[in-house]
Image (tube, rainbow, N blue to C red):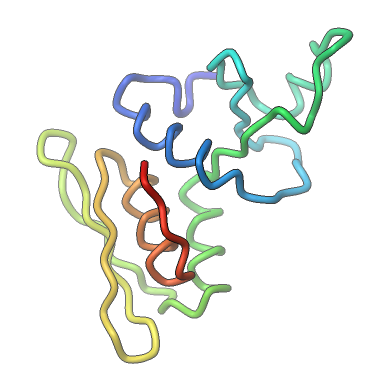
Length: 125
């Protein structure tokens, strides 16, 4: 799986490692193995070997899943993401009448940082 595997996604993978978001994995979910390899959940279940543990995997939410997380956290469903690969991305959304912002090198990182702001999750990554 090449989704989230490129160097531009390293900050996103690092952020997801720090957050370790809870999730019952489903087909087409992107997961990060302890060795840094990104796989699709269904592929991981077919190729796991003795000693591989689901507890060691980190969920890497896709953009649509991040939209659902933002909506569940009370952010406006019309989250705006703008920017480009050169300058990075900014995600903005209204949360209780206050505009919140998240910035990152990819759309997913910007949305996840916005979710952290809305959900009150402090991160160091």
